Amino acid sequence: MHRPLTATFALFLALPVAAQQSTDAVAPETATETPTATAPDAFADLGEPAKAALATKESGKPTEAQDWMIAAANPLAVEAGAKVLAEGGSAADAMVAAQLVLGLVEPQSSGLGGGAFLVWYDAATGELTTLDGRETAPLAARPTLFLDDQGEPLKFYDAVVGGRSVGTPGTPKLMETAHRMWGKSNWAGLFERAIALAEDGFTVSPRLASLIAEDTERLARFPATAEYFLPGGTALAAGDTLKNPAYAQTLRAMAQNGADAFYRGRIAEGIVDTVQGAEGNPGVLSSLDLALYDVVERPAVCAAYRAYEVCGMGPPSSGALAVGQILGTLEPFDLAAMGPDSPEAWRLIGDASRLAFADRGRYVADTDFVPVPVEGMVDPAYLATRAELLKTDKALETVEPGTPEFDHALMWADDQSIEFPSTSHISIVDAEGNALSMTTTIENGFGSRLMTGGFLLNNELTDFSFATHEDGRPIANRVEPGKRPRSSMSPTIVMQEGKPAMVVGSPGGSRIIGYVAQAVIAHIDWGMDAQAAVAMPHFVNRFGTYDLEEGTTAADLAQPLTDLGFETSVTDLNSGLHAIIVGDGLTGGADPRREGIALGE
Image (cartoon, rainbow, N blue to C red; front, side):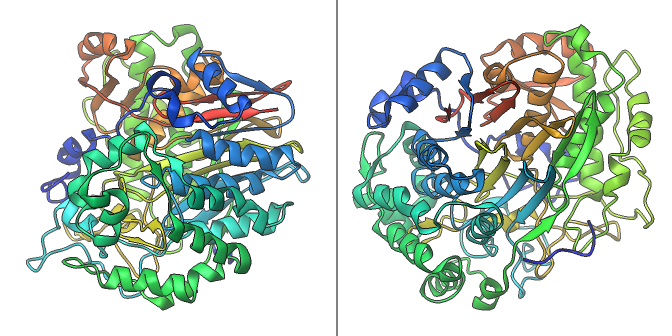
């Protein structure tokens, strides 16, 4: 691990930034109700504590515990992590066990073939740090990677499906790095539950089955992927038993030989052959890219909000910067007095988000390649000037990037990338008080649709801007060899008086930023418990159009927000928030839009 020197579609990339946002209307994954309401048999083999946690979630109440807690997107993964915590393992140990199971039972969202960002609070030292396990562009990649022979950006799925979009996976090395730094349990033992489920089989959940059914055409394109998800040409159905002996073999190799077993030798050769041999859309990932991959430890980025510090992942993620900017811009306004049903509160939140996204689109990229005004973007004085723009009675007519203080020229063009990630989030607090927030992804649902070694490969490189320049100015988030694409993943630890007060994060593409900011506001300003904060209706405004969650009370505010000058769209907003609130004890919440639970003791 090294430390850096410094802290859908056809038209979307050919259009100006302000006009491309129709593509953002598509959710990365469809919503799934609490499994006890849809298919109790899918999790019939859960232990009694996990079944009780499902029932608690369905009742709308938070899970309560005293010593430790884990919240994640699938009950089987939560059980694996909970077992580690109950046996005295650390939050880092529990993350490894949970992630390995998530990669099996929720393969469309994350896994060994993807990457992750991790935020860690160390109870012994009182320090926060982050691990960057983001995928990297191959050394053979060039800025023109996603341009056709005429120099025009490729259509989105023409770029995604196949080897061209695959970056060097980071999740295996991140798991090993976190375990080496903070683990207590035996490394090999953390693999046991995932190996057993892969060999003995697990029940296909309604969520996985529905997503396979929606993507059969692309999953059928490559033989290994089709054989696994569409056996005999028929899509897997909810309730089917699915085994993955290839995944078990991969895990056994890693359990015995660590992450090196993934980045060198047989598994690495399989990855390279699969990427470079992808029919119709081969990629340039090489064995050297895998051998050179490393995790980067970076300082956490924190922003003040009320009596708290909201801390998360800095560049190449835009998460902590954008969440921090939204909250910092809202600091002068009394959201608590307005309440969660106030159109005025949502006017302020929506336009604060638009201002943050304008800065995000102009300035944020991998700081190992591009200078980013990190400190200036969350400087309270700068955010106070942005807050002045909100002191009006109507929605802002136009939004432009600001000019945060920086010692470099700010001559970048606006980014033209788009995120459709299929992602997952894990929040953990262990018995020693360590806290972990990790968002993990393979980008689009089922990633590149390429499968090897029992796991899917990411399409993370499509998080780069396909275009390289605009009007002669370079785009900060363009493709470059070895560079990490910008992300919206926002794993967050909210600090109060030097200790964690809330651990939270979500999947959801660029809407992640809004989901996380809203959950923080819901708890801090509106006093909501963990379950209420993750379940409340969503309001998200990134680029001008206010997205309001259909089927909820958010849709009731469409007309009031229209009257305030916003364009509104009532749509599916599929978050996957998992939160733990730290007080006298621990309380946890799991998003009812997905299958996860919070479990503690």
